[in-house]
Length: 417
Image (spheres, rainbow, N blue to C red):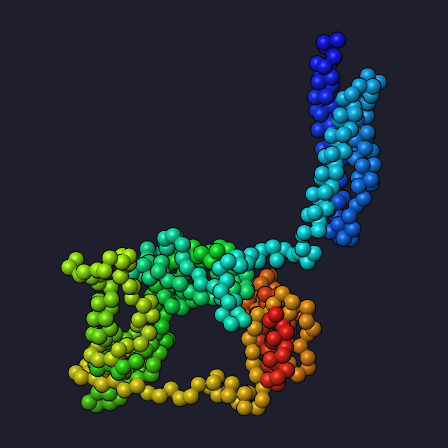
């Protein structure tokens, strides 16, 4: 009589073992069917059908494993095994049904690749979401290139950039790389941004930036002269000497005032400066684009001139710089004419609900689209220009449209929602 509880305990453990061994396949089948039926039809598979299916598969497995024998069939272990199989199958079916209900219906490989920012870092400016991207950790050197200079590394590490928040992270990375190349003349840069808008930057220092800016057939010449205030790279100037006037394009300009300002900003305060007991902060860094325009005064200017004029410029004792007018921008004139005629050109990003809107009406023309994916391979910056736009707009696409002002504004407002 005392051995009965021990035998019953053994039977229970054997039943649990047999149930786990036999219930793996029925649970997998029940979970898969529950997910597929709910995902594609939106209907939950009945529990009674799951029980019948699980028992059928378990009985076939039990026969193949030799578990259905007279001695086993008459023992408590079979009842325990059946209960374990049914619980596993029902649990797997419940999880599969829940996954089928929560998984988005419109799922593609492109959407899986397009990670987006966390909602915590998005700032609403009016009705447009923006995000401030800042580097995290150190600025790494790119393999195969010389190391970055300390000033450039410090400037990149302290930088921050505002970008639109309603585009995928891959597009944010491309835009930030393009901006860093433009602002700092980097030879190469690789940026990786996470969901918290933290950027990991790998950069290569400028390499031959001056030689790349010299047009073919011209030479770069530096002259010491009185530099006009606001002179910047790309301005057209005339170098006037005693004998002639030579036209050239400014490649770079630097004055004594610029050097003094940069020295004053970069030098830390002395030890004898008293503080008010507040938090200690690092000295402000010089602006990365401080060389964009000069403060004026005595300095040196590097100009691209024709090869035949190099000797005349170098031999001039006191050259004078005169800035030449470049005329009115043809692009702005074109936009002014379009607006004067009652038409408008707008740039927008398609929102989540805007993708369901119909194609533009006849009076609104789709000019260009920038998409994410293989469709834009080989095209400059991913832009696809009309009229050869193959498919309708989708969420995340960036587009230019043109048409009557009222119709264009209404269409942009509907698509950008």
